[in-house]
Image 1 (tube, rainbow, N blue to C red):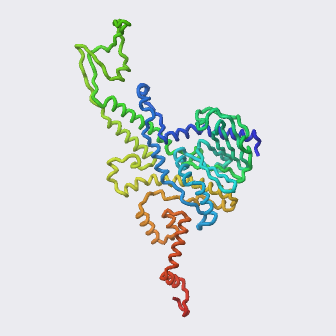
Image 2: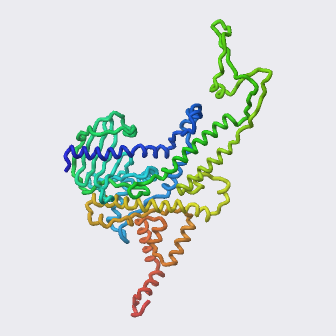
Length: 479
């Protein structure tokens, strides 16, 4: 067991790593929500327009994230080929913790922020409790030699006028707190200011308790992890193009405001001046008209025998929209998101169903990739839940193959039925086909029982089955 000083030092080390990660996570969250600060190409343009277009965003980051998230759903859990009592119970635990909704939130956060976390614990009755955690509040530290093995973890949050941290190790859990100068709900630490020390024992709970699981109960769910570099957000490369798109829209709006009508210019005239009057109304001098004032008001009265008028034609705004559409096509290609998720144009209206399905193949493959990396993490959640229940032996049998996902492809009922019929003709078992049809293991088993009951009540089926199995009749022959 760590001493208080040792626990505080470990909490500081992990908290500092979490603090450095928070600004980027916050940026990902803001871009998904459409809070995208307008980036300007020149100081002069920003001087006149930064307030006018403040808060505007043509938000495509949310489309990239939602397109994948809407195709991800865990449909069941099963260890081995048969549905055991343990598998049923752990799936009931998943549903009792509302993990259908929690996982949808967690997957969305993982896609956008590159990672999220699941905390596994037990309640007073010994039942597993699952809580999906925001990456700005959780951090997992791994062993340097065996990088998949969790060494420790923290969860940090604000509560009234204090900051709380729970430090998880394999053997003990430590609960610390310290005063906070920021109110609850504010994004503490996002300013980049280091916050070290000042911890004390948690006042509202035992500051140290044994860890009954015997393992660090925080599991990281990554998005496209790389060797020695960490996972990647789906919008990490999209944000720059998103900034460019927002700026081009601002330019278009400005051009529409200033140059959508013909503009005239006065030539052969001295720069205009404004008279200066004293208190009695007598002119005592002149001053040059401020150029900024002329640009903003776009109205000037000039006289002079040598003055002439020139004209510029109105601006063509389709120059901007063409580039914006090109930006959107780049985002679609870079993120493997089907183009018709972004914009419905004339080119998409004549595409047949097969071609449309082909355009979604990259997104389906991206879903395969997500499941490949997240399935081990979800299996670990179930494994820890099994250990909470005291089923250590069953926990060792759980693997990523135990996670059953919903079909990522969007198909009509007729398409799915046709595919399943052909596979049935090839010899696939009915139970496997029922799972492929989107049923959970429990639903598939229930349907199989219904089929057996229906067959048992059918005299023709009973006679056919007797012949197949060679059951003798009363005369000693086979009926």
